Image (cartoon, rainbow, N blue to C red; front, top):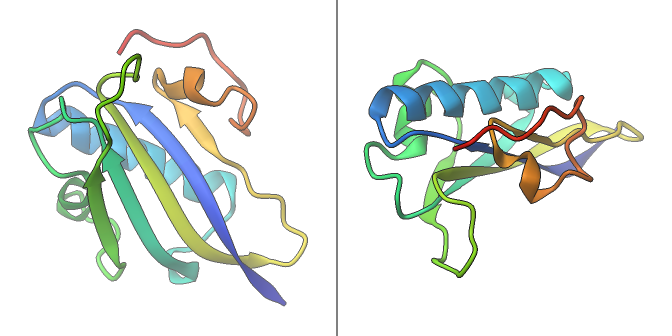
Length: 129
């Protein structure tokens, strides 16, 4: 039996179309891979992006890369708060997972500092974003 689960990911990117595409695809693929999740089990994917990333919408970046073609995608801008991590893209993926499966969240590419307790992957030293 499957249940609905929310998975989180975050990654930092340079403000170029190519790097945003690269980082979004990397985070998306890691999230699916770490959770053994086929796209057919995804309900929706919400992106949030810091205001300093303006080169391309992360949802558009995913689609232009050939991924997520049949998915419901949505993107919002992160609130501008003091001390926030710059150049950050966050993903909130709603999906079906087998009952009892342990969700793995992905924080990489400099975003490990946001949630070192939830990375679900081998932690590497944070990269400078």
